[in-house]
Length: 212
Image 1 (cartoon, rainbow, N blue to C red):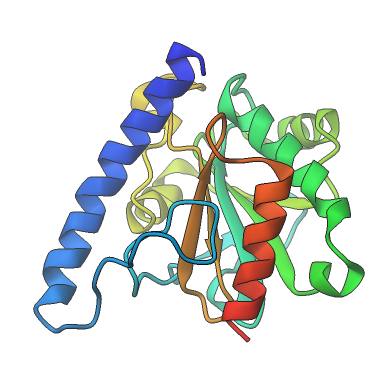
Image 2: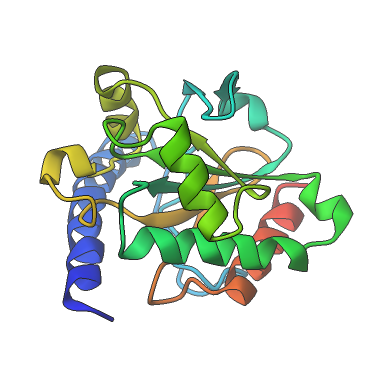
């Protein structure tokens, strides 16, 4: 792993850890959320239970709106991308593209892979198309982007460190999160650590089973 990629993971982990601490403090009082046990059906790391996909609706670079809560019934593979990133983002897009053909047709119909922009200033439809085409990921991966002011509450909802804040296209949250059919966050994979096509497919299938 490069020093820069390690920095991305560390920064993203610190931001996420702070947010999850708040979630745990708030929910432990009511007994509604406790950290999950180690191990389990997923190859990625598993977040504390009880965290669901944010109620967010954003424009797709393809046109039209995508409502994340409306994906209930599907497994959502969610990540955070910058079309000018040369570090983790190309790996993430390539892995999603390589994993997609490994899924059966009936599985693909039940899965949605979505990237959320962490740098709307550079993520134009043209730059997104070019980035995805270079990784052959256009058929597998959607990309949601809106002006910075509209994205800020979205980044906050997902506890994301955006590139607009760090000032670098390569330094931002860049994990891959898997949400099951009920919208529960069940697994997290990281480029250069445990994100591989085989691990991604494995965790997608586990999420399909767990949310059925």
